[in-house]
Amino acid sequence: MASKLHLETALTRHGWRQDVVVRIEHGVIDSIEDPGHGAPPSERIAGVVVPGLPNLHSHAFQRAMAGLTEHRGAESDSFWTWREQMYRFVERLGPDELEAIAALAYMEMLEAGFTSVAEFHYLHHQPDGRPYDNIGEMSERIVAAAAATGIGLTLLPVLYRQGGFLGKEASPGQRRFLSTRDSYARLMETRVPGGAIGIAPHSLRAVTLEDLQWADRTWRGQPAHIHVAEQTREVDDCLAAHGRRPVDLLLDTIEVDARRWCLVHATHADAGERARIAKANAVAGLCPITEANLGDGLFDVPSFLTHGGRLGVGSDSNVRLSVADELRTLEYGQRLFHQQRNVLGNASCSTGRRLFDLALAGGAQAVGQPVGALEPGKRADFVVLEADGHAGDSVLDAWLFAADNRAIRSVYCSGVPVVREGRHIARETIAARYRRLRP
Image (cartoon, rainbow, N blue to C red; front, side, top):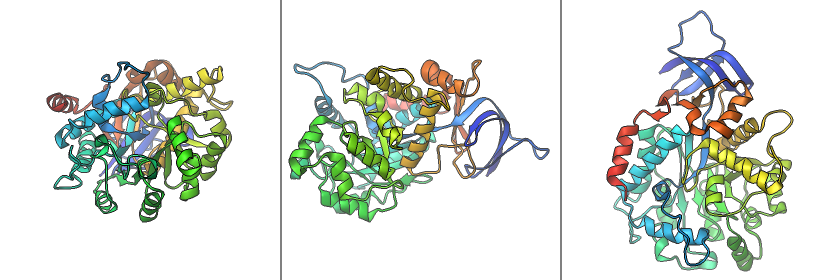
C-alpha cells in the first residue's frame, strides 16, 4: 500500500527541510521530495515532524508497579531492596495481566514519542516456575500487545540460568525467569511479525560464561543486549568471582561489535571499560529515569563521547514514560555531576538537538531495525510536534526542556497515525482492559 504525506517542516537526515512530500510504500519511506505536479498527497501535516525515538530497554510489566515502591524500609533502600519488591509483584501476573499491562505501557510510550521498543522480557513461566503448555505464551502476549498499539517491537527473550556468580542457586523469586538451553531455544522461535527478535543474557551474574558464548554463537547477527555494571555490588562480586570487572569480563569473553550489542546501564564501568565499549562501537543503553529512581549512579557521558561512544535511552522500569524526560534527566544528571550547563551540547548544534541525534542513532542500532531517521529505506515512524513559536533546533530544546509530552500532537508508525491530538487512537479500549485486569 502506497501513500503520500505532505510535511510542513521535517527533520531529515540532511537537516531541517520545509514543505516536503514523503512517499511511503508498505510502511517504509520510499522517497522525500519537493512537491510536484503529480497526484496530491493524501494528507498535509502541519507542525514539526521529527523521527520517532527508539526505546532500547523496557520491562513492560513493571509499568504496573509505578508508584508502589516509594516507601523507605527499616534500612536504607537500594536496587536490591527494590528487586525483592519486584519479585513479589510478579507472582500476581498471568498471561492476561501481562498483555494488558504491556499494551498500556506501549500505548503510553507512543503518546510520549517512542515509536519502537526493545522489550527485555524475562517473565517466561508460571509462578511456581513450571512452563506454560505453550512455552512461548508470555512472549506471544508481548507481541500481541505491541500489535494492538502499533509500536515497533524488538523482542529480547532473556536467558536466565542462575541466581548469582559461580552457579549460585536461584531464589524462589527468580524461578519464573529460569530457562534451560533447550527451553530458551524454543523461546527464540517466537514470531514477531514486522519486528525483530534478539538475545538477552540477563547479566553476567545470571548466566555462566559458557552460556554467554553459546547464545552469542547460536544467534550471531541478531540483536544482543545485556545488563552490565549497573550496581557497585555487581562490580565487587564480579571481581571476587572472576578477578575482572564486568565490562572487561564481557569483552574478554565474546566479540562485542557494532552490529548487535547493547550494554544496558554500564553505570559503574571505569574509564578503561568505557573506552573499550566505545572502541567496540557497541551501544551504551542508558535509562536515566530508572537509574535515578533506583539510586544507581551516573554514567560519565562526556568521557564516553570523547572516545566516540554511542548511546541510546530506554525506559527500563517504566516508572515514567517520556522521551523528553529521559533526555532531560540524562543532561541534568551530567550538569549536576560536572557542575556545568549544556554538558552534552556542542558548538555545532543545541543541547536538545545533540541529545536527540545521539539517542536516535544509538537507539536504532540497538533495536536492530530500520528506524531512527526520516530517509528512504527507514520505517515511516515519526512524531509531530507543536512548534509553539519555535523554529529549527529550538523546537527540540523547547520539547525536551520545557514542554514534555504536551508538545506531541500526533505520532505515526509505519506511516499510520496511532496518536491523534496527544491520545492513542485505541486509548479507551486499552485503558479499560488494563483497569479490569490490573493486579
